[in-house]
Image 1 (spheres, rainbow, N blue to C red):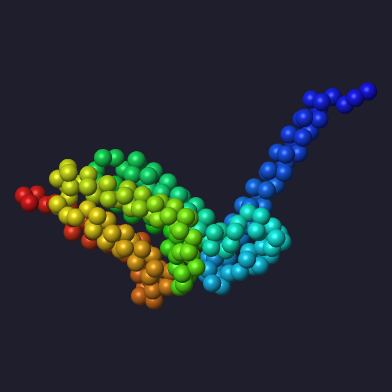
Image 2: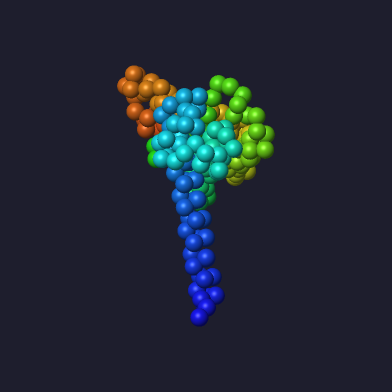
Amino acid sequence: MGTDPVIISRKNMKTRARTEEDKLIKKRRLLDSAKKLFSLHGYQGTSVGMITENAGVSTGTFYLYFKSKPEIYRILNIEGIDILHGYIKESISQAGSDAAGRLSAIAGAYFSFYREYREYYDIIAILHLGQEEFFRDTSMLQAVEEKTVHLLSLLQAVIEEGIKSGDFKPVDARKTTTVLWATMDGILLLEKRNVMNIINESLDDIVKESIEMAFRGIIKKKGE
């Protein structure tokens, strides 16, 4: 009596499903391991061997999923940018139509991302790279650059809306975007270097003051 081919087919499907699931689990384990180690030790201080040991897999397994250390770093970079992008889009949608409120919401979303996804922040800020290795693979670098430009375009669009509505002064929206983003990044770098503790200032207070300073520079006063 032969075996039912339907049963065999179902068994094969379940086996393939388990195999694919196992692959995804191992890949995610490697990504999470790399994310943690890059944040702790920096890019240069983290080796493929450290990543695989922490993930509990062999070095050979690493190369089944990733070509190199720069590749896994760039993938994590893209993941981090995507999370931040989601935070900012949601903050804009919840802030209403007021341009100043949207601008404040974007800043709040960025600092929330920093607090909740510190490891990803370290990676997207590319704090640990002092060499050209990260930038050699132009195909993946292009994806990182495109996502970064799109992220900044969200902030620029809010500034342009504020100018159009008359809420903001007729500033150069692109340059203002760069300055505001650089200000936010600079504040977080001070926090990372423990400067806030040294000067006895809270991150929240400095963030609030930076937003108020930005508004004083671009919000149009009555009669202007």
